[in-house]
Every structure is written in structure tokens, then in C-alpha cells.
Image (cartoon, rainbow, N blue to C red; front, top):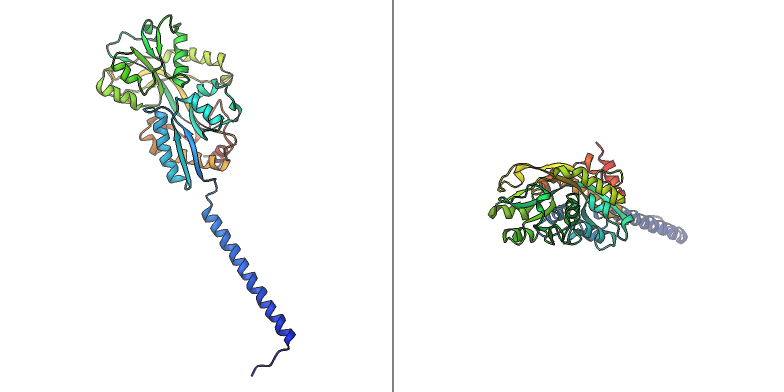
Length: 341
């Protein structure tokens, strides 16, 4: 029979056992909580975030749809809501004033933008090039911009990046709306049908290759592209002169629309034209952790998106960081440092 302990000693031993038990529970709870927190916290804010894309049938809209699918897979807890817009300038305004968190815009639209909040704009990456495309019927006598004199020309929706470029191209050719030609506000959503219906004689478009709206047009209408490559220097001079953001930065350059882009065009030869870089844009106050993960998704989804947006195949961490005239967002900078070759 075990010895009987004095009452005071029994109380002390009982308190010690209680303290040990409580301590064990606290340690276990802390460890479990830490494990749950680590496994359940993705390291970036979750919820719905918005992205401004562009017009239906344009490459911005297609790229946004493909990126949305990549975000669904690569960013658990994040839903990317896409907002249609009239193009790059509209996207910049929407991101700057907080209606959207992300958007796509060309470098010339960024350099030209002078709206409220422009100082808050940042870039995640240089994505792919836009190609300026002047589309006319195959039997058109238009062989250069100067030949548009006296014609009806679709120059993009008001406030769009297409309108900005078309106005500059026409001014270099010394053509003025109302006096020398009729400018009509057709964008990629309605310009192809207007050309086919003979409501216009030509239209401008600036977008990645290929553009679905033009692909559809070539399937049941004979069209061709007019060369524009010789205008690159003049276009860059205009940007340097008119846009503060373009100072000491090359905005436009000569490139080529390859024949494979529109194989049903006639002729389907390669055409020299103007190119301008597209940037994925955000705002300085969008959480850096979200931006960092979004940048990773953009880079990791390059091949999948490139199957539909062929220009996107050229996205690379070594070139994506050149986002002039916008500075890199802090989260994007962290990502590029972490994967530096």
C-alpha cells in the first residue's frame, strides 16, 4: 500500500501536472496553428482583382482571357475579372484611378498618357509587340499612306491606341481629317465588316499577331496590308517631341508582319511595318506580393498563351524588365531578382 502524502504536497504536485498539461496544449496549438497558417496562406492577398483588356476581337481581349485561365491555375484564391475597354489609353486611365488593378497598354500610349494618377503607374513586364496594320482590299490602288488621300479611313475608336497611332501616321504623310480624307471611328470590332461592306476604303489596326478580327476577314474577303515600316523614324520624332514620357526612349521601330500571320490575305507576302511594345501595367499601391505572384504567372504561362498569341512566345525574363517609359513595380522587381539567370 503506497504511503499517504501530506495534503499540501498533493496540492503542489497536482498544480504542477496541470501546468505541464496546459503548456503541452499551448505548444501543440501553436505548432498546429503555424502549420495551418503556412499551408493555408498563399503569401498574397486573395479575392477578386480586375484587369482592363480591350475590344472584342482584339488581341488584348484574347491575351486577357488566356491569362485569366493561367491565374485560375497558378494563384489559388484569386479571381481575375476582365473588363473590356476601348484600348490602351482607356486601360491606363482605369488602372490609374483604381477601377482596375492591371491592364495592357502600348509604350506610346503610356508615354502620351497625362491623366490623373499617372505617377502611380508601374509595369510588371514588357509582353509582346503590337504591329501597326493598314488594311485595304487586295485590288486597292493604295500602296502607301499618301494614297489614302480622298478616301474613307477607319482610324480606331475615340481615345484608343489605334487612334493615337493612326493620327500620327497620317500627320507624317501630311494628311488631315476633313480636308484630305474622311476619318471614321471604326475599331477592330466593326472595321472589317465595314471594309467588306464598302463603307470604308481602308482601316488602321494596332495589335499583336495574328489578330482574330483580321483573320476572320481574310477568310471571306480579299485584303492586303500596306507597308508602313519606313515611317518609324518620323513616328519616333513625333513621340519625342509630343510626349514627356518618351524622352530618351525609343518608342516605335521597324518590324515585319510575316506571311504566316494572315495566310489567306492576297498577296500573303511579308510586309514591313511599325512595331511598338506592349506593357502589363499596374499601380504602385497594388500589394507587392500580389504583383510578384502575378509576374510569375505571366512568365510561366508564356508558352501556353503563345500558342494563341504568337508574339507572346518572345516574352522572356531578360527582355521583360525593359518596361520604359514605366518603372518596374516593386513586386515585379523582386520576382526578376529571384529568377535572375
